Length: 204
Image 1: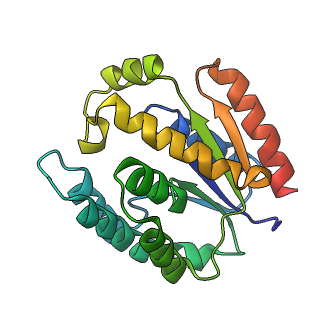
Image 2: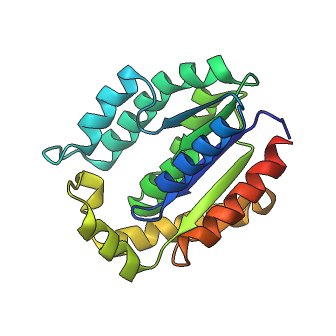
Image 3: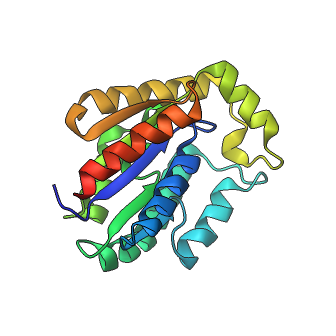
């Protein structure tokens, strides 16, 4: 594995992935390790414009439009990733496996289409390691209630999130050596300690 890996934080809403990626970014800053932190959809100005469109509560796209918008955001984002590829550690808040989990397992879009588009866009870009954050329904609901602003993807029913999370778990089983499950129902400090210990191993 590269000492400048691509590390992705995956998980459904309320699973803690955004907290943990911010923690890792601050940790790398303290160690003076060059890195970038981006999110999907988003990551650069054009992708952020598409993000606003996708997540807007007034948007009502069908499943195929949703997929193509996410891929359009990734198409813009990939340029940002390539500029840092093998030059910096790359931290990504959601990436290609999210598209499979949400659009295929959650919405029923053909997985072959998703994988074809991902391969076309990513080419030689491969994720080195993924932290998959898992959360139970009770904590998911409690955490969403605490949010001051809910976007379109924060408002799906619980059965949708269950399908998506189960999809992530199926994906992770195929890549066990590159996935670490993080039980977000545990105390956050326990997970922070585990994640940082793995980060140390990945960047040695």
